[in-house]
Length: 201
Image 1 (cartoon, rainbow, N blue to C red):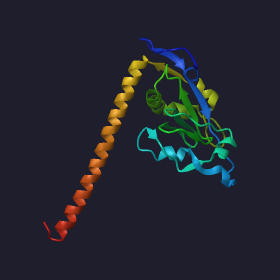
Image 2: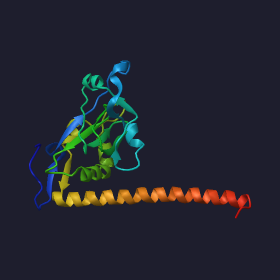
Image 3: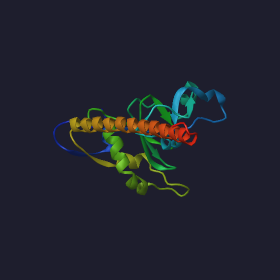
Image 4: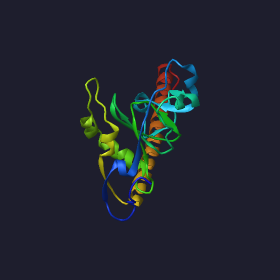
């Protein structure tokens, strides 16, 4: 689709622009009410900063069909990898529903014959300090589409990437369950404290 197939048994070093399609975002005219509050999710870096895990399935603002048609943003397919490219650089997420983004993103649509989106997600997370160093600009730093397309990545066989992604998902599921259990324990402890102070134990 975008580049050579790297799903054999060798590790291959390639560029992100060869195995993904890099998509920039945009913002419709904010004063035009008909462009907003539709059914199309529209991500900003703030939406990613509020995430507690790798996946995003909702956004604080939405666009209408008119809104997305009014500006050079694109509807990203499920399992794209969103990367905030300015203010700040380096937030990463995988979309579980189709969504567009504002201009603060360079998002990746992976060639699934070459790269697993969960592997790319973790790679970009680990690459964040280098991404920040690649940013340029006088007012605030930004990583350009041209720069991210040239980033090199060493890929294991696709099967290993998928196994890694499955482990990532399993760990995330356990983390969520543990977080929920801790909330339940905190609630129980607070209840026991109140009963003890009232002499009800």
